Image (cartoon, rainbow, N blue to C red; front, side, top):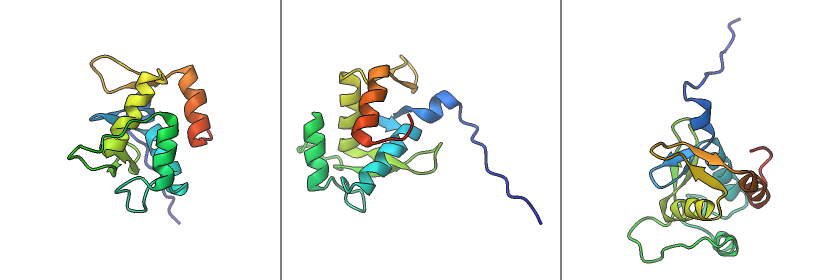
Length: 133
């Protein structure tokens, strides 16, 4: 009998956990947030837009969505390190902007790396009911 090996990612740990993907959050953290949003029905099953519940939660958090953009309201964006989806589109960008404004995350100048602050760990854990971040 052969043994199956679990593939090991060659992506550096600091990029695997949280980084940017264009103008939105990517990595393990973003994938976990996206999966929470699907499970809690904040997103339509095809991820094309927020549900009424999702819009309400975004509004309560203070996320400002741009209804006049030509961009998709939301979409699943395949995460290259996790091989699962994270939130893209206007909603993904607006959520990442809120995280930056509240200083829950910081960017490393000139790089895609994103660091989660201590207050960000508390807030993001609470908002998205994450087990570990």
